[in-house]
Image (cartoon, rainbow, N blue to C red; front, side, top):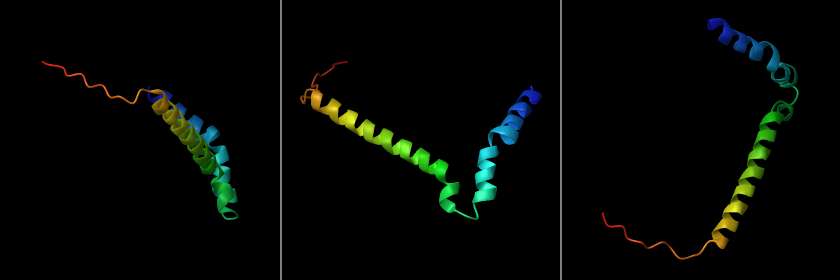
Length: 75
């Protein structure tokens, strides 16, 4: 079982993080914006999803009846 998790660690460290190592080591001294391009992409995606979510909440609140449920439950 230990070999399985070491294999996963090796996969990420040796192969999947190569582009990030390139951004961190080779480009960082030259341009701060180029090294943070992935962060900017995630920030943009989050902003777009947040705006979509707010629009959906606005549509939902307009379509729902404005009266509140005033039922009283006796135990």
